[in-house]
Length: 534
Ligand SMILES: [Ca+2]
Image (cartoon, rainbow, N blue to C red; front, side, top):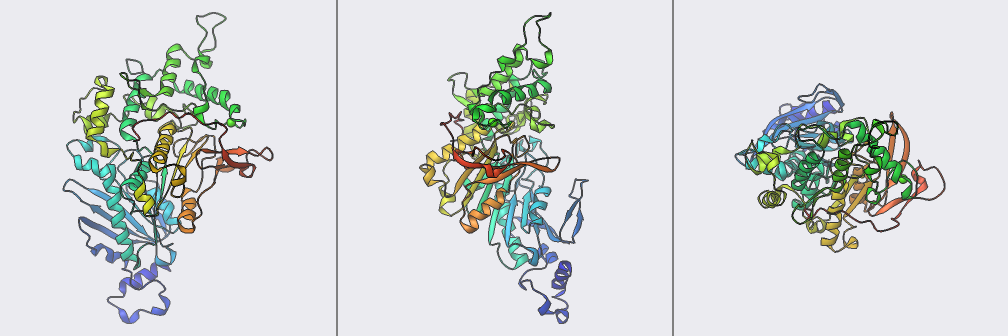
C-alpha cells in the first residue's frame, strides 16, 4: 500500500493522467524517494535514494538480517573539508507512517560505521532517522594520522553535518520540515549528544546523552593508567576474570544493605568503602592458607585499589581522571560487563591510538614514556576540541532544548563519577539546580552497566520521557526502568533525577516500581571529580 503510493508519486511526472489525487493522502509536495538522488546540497553528494519495501534488510557489512517497515533509504557522503569523507544515511518512513519527527542516532567507541540497529529502532517507531560513520571506517584510530580534519569530523563535525543535511532531505521527501528533532546516543553517542548540546544547540529539540564518553582526553589517560596498574611488566593481567567477579561479589555483599535496602544493588558506589584488602589471601601454605579462588594476592589487592582511586597527578596529587566504581569489576557474562574490554583483556592500553595518531603523530610512541602532567597539558591545549566538556549550556537553555543524561552506577567503561562531575559542573556554571532543572536532568541507575546490562533495572524509555518533556512540558520526575531475566521482567524501579534516589516506601515488593518514591539521598555524597570536565 505504502509502496504503491510512492511509486504512484514517482510516476506522477510522466503519467499525470493516471494519478488519482483522492486516494493520495500524503502531501503532494513531497519528492518521490528515487528523485531525492537529484537533490543538490553544498558539500554533500547523495549516492543513492532507494525505496525499500517492508521486509528483510541486511545492513552493509552485516550478515544479520533485520525486518523493517517500508522506508526510503538515502545514502550520502559529506565533504565539508577536502579531507572529509563523512558517510551517512537517512531513512524516511512513508508519509502516512511518519510521526513527523527526526531521530539522529549516535555511535559507539571510535566505531566508524553507520548505526543501523539504532536506526531500525527509531524507524519502527515512525521516525525519520539518520546515522553517520563519523568520517572514517572501523574502530582503529589510524585514520587521524596526518588527517587533522578527520579528527574534527569524528569529534563533532560529522554529526552536525549529518543533522543539517538530514533535515533538508526529510523536508524534501515529506514536503515539510520535521516538527521535532531528537538525538539519542550512548557511550561515544553520549559524547556526541553532549557535543551537540554544547556546540550546536539549534540542531535538536531534545537530546539523550547516555553514559557519555565526553571527557575523552582524560579518559584516554585514564585507560592508560588503568592498564598500567592492572598489568605485570610482561603485559600479563594481574587480576584474572574470576577475581574480578570475586571483587564485585564482595563489594556488593559489603555495601548492599548499607544503602538502606538489601536488594543486591549498591545504590551509590561512592558511599561504598569496600576494601579489597579484606580478601587478601592468608600468607604461606599449609592448613591456614585460604582457597586461592576465594582470595586475592597482594598485587591483586593493590591493582584493585588503584582502579578505584583513579589517576592522580604524580606531581600535585590532583585527580586527573576518576577511578572506576566498586561493583563495576565484573558482573555479567560478557567482557563489556567488566573491566575486561577496556582494561584487563587488551594486550596493551586501550586508546593508544589517541596518543600515537591524534596527539604525537608517532606510530612508535611508547606508552611507558608518558608524563602525566606534561602530556595532559599538551593534549588539552592541542586537542581541546576533542572533549565536549563545556559546562556552559546557555545556548541549549536559550533555544528551549532539553537534555536528558543518564549513566549506570556499575559502568565499567565510562566511570559514572565522571558523568556526575560533569553534571555538577554544569549546575555550578549555570547557577544551580533551579536554573538547570527546566532543561537538563540527569539519572543514575543503580546496578546498571555501560549503556545497559547489569543486575539493576537497566531498560527504560529515555526518548519517550524526553518527548513528554519537549512536546508536553512534562519534565521527567521519575523514569521507570525494568530488569529482565531471559526476556522476562522480574524487577521495576524508578530512576530519579540526580541527586534524588529511589526510596523504598517500606511496604510492597522491592521488585515493583510502585513501592518506591524519588526522594533526597540521606546524606550528601562526596564526589570524586575529574577537573577535566571544565
Ligand atoms: Ca542495596
